Image (cartoon, rainbow, N blue to C red):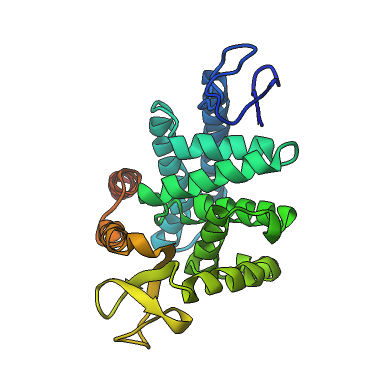
Length: 285
């Protein structure tokens, strides 16, 4: 059941709007939430610069290099804040909406939270959102929430779709540290999925760094041609969809190669601009 954010009415999972108050059941951030978030970030920036200016004014920091390095911390915070403020004017991405709704349902409706977090993972992957800047802030918390919900509901109560997502997380190198806590349910699901793979109903695919393409994996998640090669982006898919899935996986991986997201480009350009300004100011002094 989906609990309305505004009136707390319970709605069927298929509903898009609340049957009681008519509000969207998958809302983005409200104006008030965005304003409070921006104010909070600005306060952090002001405090950061205030401390930095005090240090440079009242303490002997030695060389200009050391002094310049101290400016990098508030500078980086300022850059990130500017990017966040710019992004706040955009519509909330769907994957963020699902993450937010999943968080809201964790305690009262864990099944709905599991469904929402599963959708969020798929949306984030399809849009290549697990990148340098979002890796730790998006991937890890999302994976943790999904694994925690799976663990609470136990393997026997999970649908096959959730089990496949769970195994894809277990194979993700980003999740290497967090999966240790959930090894019991992962091992249980792995046995079940292993049977399906052995029976040829499902197949395991991944991207081989030696072949430079998506391949069907053999025993122990290895490439048949290069068993010692590193395999990334492991997925478990229906055998009937192997060809299409290999193409999609290849495209997904190659989108990431040498490609920076819009946010990363903004941060880099702003960093270069601020660095240039600081160099000019210090030279003038």
